[in-house]
Length: 156
Image (tube, rainbow, N blue to C red):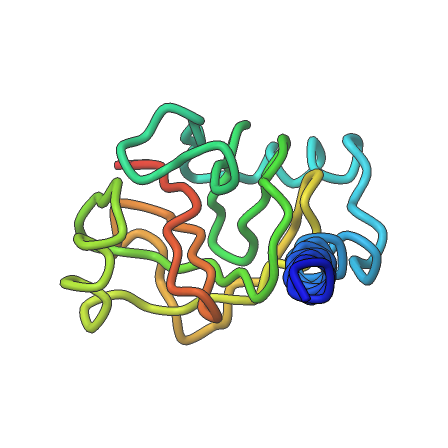
């Protein structure tokens, strides 16, 4: 009887580990090709603002982080760097700088969602014409599905 209980528990644990691994790996496997360094560098020439994503923010951890230079232009926002892989990342602009999940949730109604982030090494997103980046001060990456803060940077 003890052996059957052990086998059931061990199989359930392995299924849970496999499921968690799948959630982590799926965005990596389905990500489109990342923009090249030269493509991002060309856009950086037209940037109005630049900022840095750092791994040591209050709300970042080993699984939720960003690292690199963010360039904010009138029409595009780009990253030359890396994001921790994950599902359902969104890029927001905020009038206030936030470094943690609780602050993000408290201020989310004052932010504007710019675009989905689908690549983890470099990205380029188009800023909709209805959004003026000069009216905001910070860029934030947020995981909608799990309501997790990934990273942020203050650009003005």
